[in-house]
Image 1 (tube, helix red, strand yellow):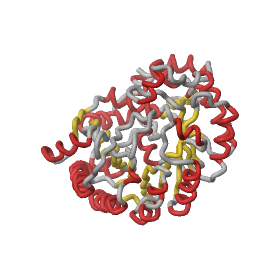
Image 2 (image 1 turned 90 degrees about the horizontal axis):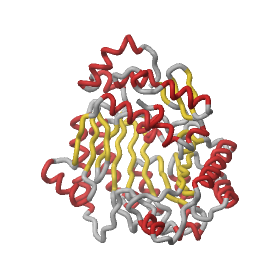
Image 3 (image 1 turned 135 degrees about the vertical axis):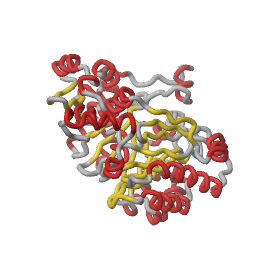
Length: 405
């Protein structure tokens, strides 16, 4: 993303923003693939992801459908190699390992793999799913992200999780035995969770030796069971000031342990960052297949039908699961890229981004407002490079509309 010769490349960038990247540029840039498996055993009360509970799943039908959806996208992007693949959900660890292997084989045939490709699968710590770890590793998965969410029994019950604390520890231990890289998620700022409670839990998490942690504050999302419970007065979410205290505690503990934040909620040892998610945050091209999956390719936004049955019907009619494919203007792409990139600790080189998108950096950032925020310690600047400071990340939602044109 870095670069400074805006004037030299402006005409080329403008052509690419109108007509898509040239072939030589396509070959040079990596591509990420997201595969959505929409099924779960049950719906967690905090979850607003596209997940569904179904009693029966026709695996052969779903194999054929995902392969068809993949083939459609491959025809449009076959001159790029895949740098990462991510199986998300839902609960993709419920997928038969043979299905995972078939999808990876097809992806390699369509695109080819970068020599260091990262292939991640999200998993729950339930014993039945952990038993599949060895077979999933044999199928080609080399990174697993485990939805632990808490190491406290009471919190797991509150969050509606189907595993217990012992299963969480066994899942991490088993994953470390089978996969090159392991990450797990925790949710904090639960009702009545004290700073001491969170410090003890996070300290324990850091002692387990994984290279990556995703640490999220509990948010009450529209349409979830938790939203209904809060509206009915069944519990009160954590106070925002307390949430900020816990966030600052999180940064201090992870930084001291050598697992600093590289994104608002994601922490990693050097070299252990999620390459797939960095593609999103750095606004690279990615393909999304499966129900509800989003994609960004050649300046267009794609979205698949969300409901599994509607996605399957669309595949039968059209040969793909797309509900929409919308070309994005240079302004829209710049806005998205900044919103994503400013979540990163590294920030954004606005001139380099402008070269890619055909926009001058003065058309993207309100530098006068950025200077004001810099004096307040919320952002830092170095010529056309800008990043939000650790203090500013607490106010990211308020900062973005101020500095983005």
